[in-house]
Image (cartoon, rainbow, N blue to C red):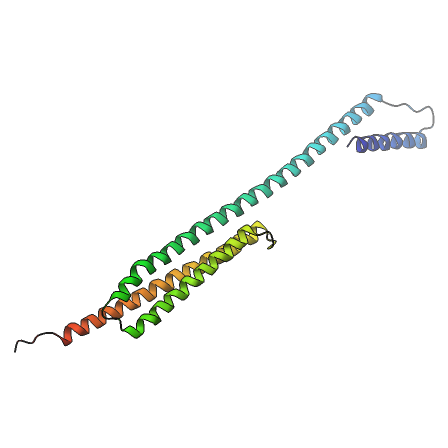
Length: 193
């Protein structure tokens, strides 16, 4: 920065000297007070420019830090949602599936098909969690925080779809059971004619 100031001062001095000789017809007269105030203002301007450049660099660095924090927060939110969705999947399988399979209105050949469909959803969920673990813990996948947050958001959407799918299947099987129970009640009612 001092080098730049010296260059500016030298070029101003040369300009004054050259212009002074070219135009003067007698002994040149210089006003030193104007020259000194010009030099002082140039030095002050150089200092202010230097401070502005430092401020710009500082602000750029702070913006990068804020972006990193925002991406980490997005990742944490996505992971929290994924964990919540997977917890919901396991609760449905533990409670609702057991009730469905224990119902006397589910036929023996349907038990395997129902179990397999729920198992496929759970396997998909486990594979998704393993993929997320790999993304978060492995340096082999060179990803920025923003790319990682995007992948986590996609996985979160997939887990929401799995929860919706498993809830729809549960609701459908409950409706089948309710229908068959109603059929059984109608077919086995006593008539009082």
